[in-house]
Image (cartoon, rainbow, N blue to C red):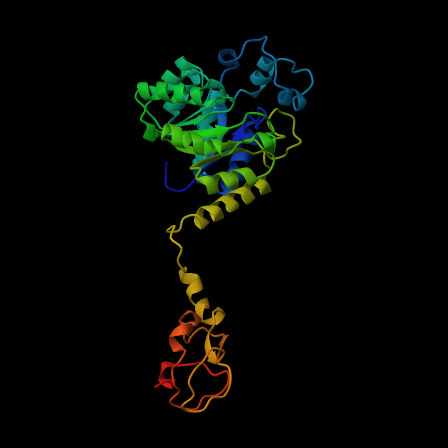
Length: 341
């Protein structure tokens, strides 16, 4: 991964089976400034049985009549032939195309398509044959960890490493797969636990409502952020409700880039170049409190601290006590070393 935070705008299945809608999603992701726009590549027959049930969040936002998970996913398949057109379209708009492959056939296709990394979804973290197949492609991997305990994350990473992927090629995303995720269930500090225990780069895949948590993740050290987005949260489909609309996506991107700059300093507490000019204006220096004649011996209470800070630092006040004036001075004038014998 690059030094900057990689931001993946997750279009997912929010194209609703319409290639023109998919293109509009690419346009919005590029306009927001995301690094990648990501879709999902799968064949329903390779992913789910015809008797599998939907999750509650899928039922709430799916069209009535789509009673099975199989039929829902069948309706949301993105044909292989779309990928070529969408990838070209994304590249013309200056954004990288990415898609999550959910089965081995899709992984092989995406490899031939020329994507530059593989994203392993949370649901496949315990799918050893799948993990081995992804690892065999030899490309960098982003691994989502929703629903997984640390032991399962370690086991998945071990499989990838055992089949040729180095830890330097892996970024592990903390994730919660409830759509939308309640704030009390985010457990964002687990991202740092993953990093400390596995020695890999980490990031965060977000399904909360709003943009606060991805921004916080960046402040904590996330190197990759993934967030679903849509053109309209009220559209039919399983993921629209927990997705950002275009204005929110752009706001999240801008906020992350600002936070990224804010945490990019040296780490040492020192005045920045932009604030150094304020030192003289805002700080104070020692001034005479009253009119004093030549020969006056300075005692406690003879000085007052006033702006500007261009004179003697008040932290040095003790070194001037007991000194004798070699000239007459006026009240509230700034003190100088030349005033003393």
